[in-house]
Length: 123
Image (cartoon, rainbow, N blue to C red):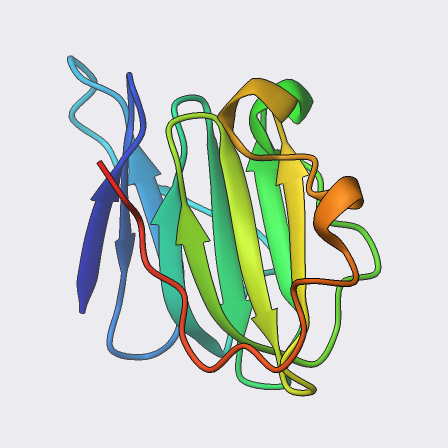
């Protein structure tokens, strides 16, 4: 299992590939409906992103902080900054989304973000 935290909520990836979230002071877990076969879970300040076994990504939360990852496929690994996400794709390309001030807009780097083997977060 895997745990991650946004600014005001927690998320847990269960062994069965499902995800639950909770916000203190609530004492109940909230399953993320329609989400299964998850292999990785990451969080930005106000959003979560989940990598599914088929290489697609589901994201939810505040759109400004990456809560929308529509049509993202062929992903191998996810990483999060405080306000954005980065996805390493099977072809070695990188796709980012979320707050541009937090790395969510790498449009200017598109040609340079090729043949990438690994992503990491620099603090």
